[in-house]
Length: 401
Ligand code: ARG
Image (cartoon, rainbow, N blue to C red; front, side, top):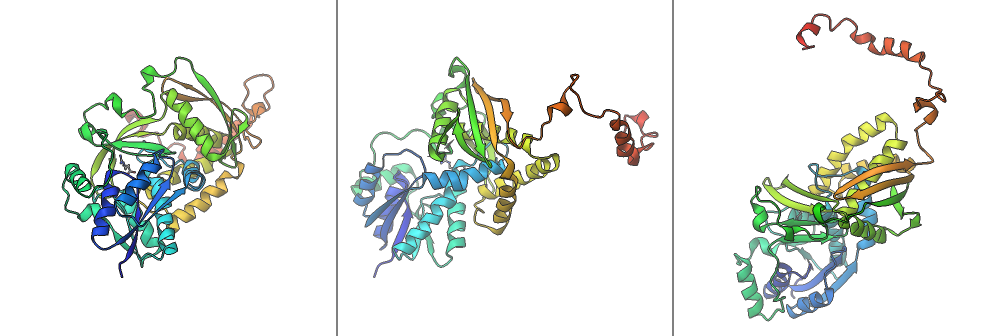
């Protein structure tokens, strides 16, 4: 009896060819399609998978789970990889892998497969997650081992086997898209000195062609979760979609970076994440209003670890879970509203308020309303500086060195 394999199927050329390739090797292929907001026409993709030999195509709308269980924790942690990547692709992989494993169990498959190459991070994320959740599953990675050495060879194979691949010429880039952002690489971008051509702008308008007038947006948070825009409650998916459109129109959320891949190489990627950029600016600002100094500083140190774990496919691991507990604890007071202005590629916080605000105007003011005891500062500074008193006498003449 032939083995059943559940393939993470995107509808693109690689995974369409993979359906046929696996079928030809004796597998019964169940194609699993996750909707994470990539906005691709799934009707044609389903037909393509069937034409390529899939015995079943399973489509799941994972958008809400993606935003609430993956994007929100990353937002609350302020997870940004190497200062520029909000981790859209990386966040979607453990979610898709989890559902791939669940689907394998549901259809009694003994194997799962993906269409990632052997040079990228995504193979690591899919496989590490699958092994964490069920080490007994066989993992097949056709693209890593098959005979095709170019896209042209894959297209020829698809034609030979009458797989209806889209004849419309594919763009010059490799693009991965979901609700949290878009990743754009390859083609002319492989030269790190080459400026990104205008066709690398997917949803975002270049700042020079952004909306002529600034927009103001108010974002409401409840315990660290964005719950409303401009005073209106919005569900997670609608809220991200709305901010993506708004941010894109104002040129917000692009980055162009050289990044360090898990497999050891440097690569060049363009990212677009308008909603993420706006939410991150707002959430970070609100935290500064409601969290004390030590917590802000300590949490800042956690952000980088959290980002690197997401990037490296370590979502379902003990340290990540422990950090989640810490971050969840910090979010209890992160309730309030942040007002931002969006204009020509810039997103600036203009105002913030919270029932848990630690800001006391009567202490901060320079007006007659001041209640800060300035005389207390004298004794405070004496003791605060005591450990260092006199220690600079000999070195002051050398600029303190
Ligand atoms: N470099 C990003 C990551 O590892 C995105 C990978 C997919 N990018 C792409 N353009 N297909 O998360």
